[in-house]
Length: 99
Image 1 (cartoon, rainbow, N blue to C red):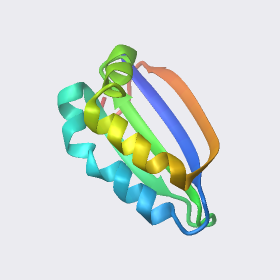
Image 2 (image 1 turned 180 degrees about the vertical axis):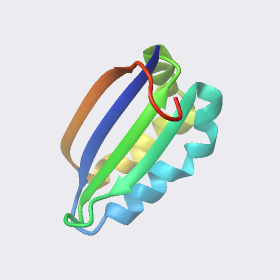
Image 3 (image 1 turned 90 degrees about the vertical axis):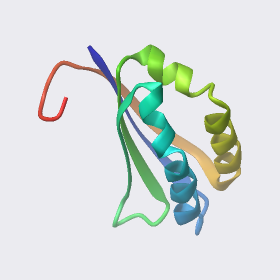
Image 4 (image 1 turned 120 degrees about the horizontal axis):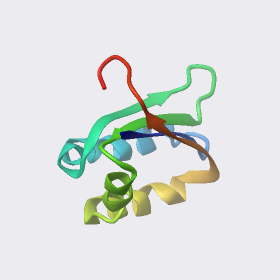
């Protein structure tokens, strides 16, 4: 079964677009790591909120991707721009359109 991870993060005021750019820089390499979907979105009514939806071959693929050098570098660049307010939700994907 596929693994889904959906999260949101809050940036320090005025840094949303910078964090979005960091998140999108490494998107091309995720497919080889087992990622089926990586969608970064912003909230129209909240200028400091970012939401990320991910679909992976498995939880193990997701966890291993966080150990990739490029992922670690992106996380290190983004963390100082974030407030520390995160919300995440995991799920086992059992079906649907595109999965």
